[in-house]
Image (cartoon, rainbow, N blue to C red; front, top):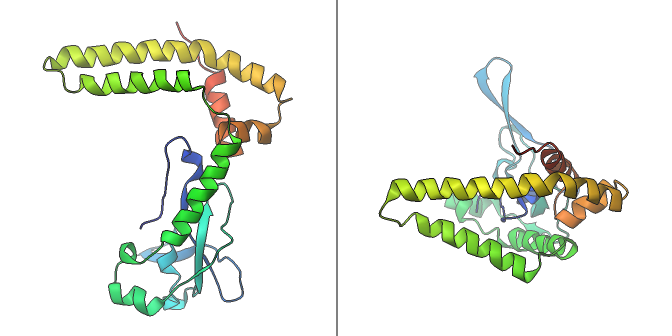
Length: 202
């Protein structure tokens, strides 16, 4: 299972396998000299912490998230088995992955929930747009999709800026609280609010 775990609606909470050294510390990125002068490639992929070429040797793995969360459970790494399979995708990393999924459940539990009727309407819109790909008259179907996108953009442009201003007033401009309500990291929430704030529709 490769790094870069994502779940729709929680893109800023990208997950991956993190590693720990024998002393319990989390190592920084490993660097690779690509032979092109001062250009170095860096990686935090768990399988690169194998002790080869003076790289650190990880003794255990855990779940990690782009938001800074780290799993409390540790899973030993059997490097002999890793080298036997010779493919990181076939090594068992389900423990860290499941811990990351549990972390996302906690994030979702703290975020605001869409009302069921609104969630149903949005689901219907997506399903209707998906059906258009099956229409025989392709040109008309594509034009219909773009027309629908235009209507959706108008709704967002009308609602987004006002909602940003109102939310900032209600939360006293507390970015941690806003980010938690949106189920995002503070950096992603700040970017999202700035995006909506600048929207205009003519």
